Image 1 (cartoon, rainbow, N blue to C red):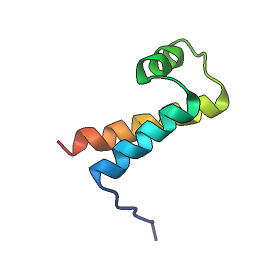
Image 2: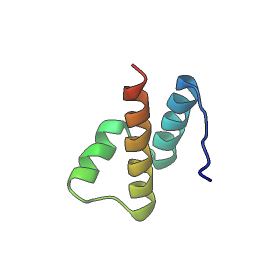
Image 3: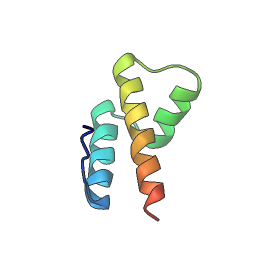
Length: 61
């Protein structure tokens, strides 16, 4: 049976901000480096997580 995690918009935005702080980059810098395949494995994990969070946040509008 799949697990469902419920989070508020604020919790998702906080998680997104914490992830960017963890890699010490702005969203724009992370996106730019992702576009040219210049991320470490940990940074790439953060990028994919942020993409997922953005998908969820966009879907709440």
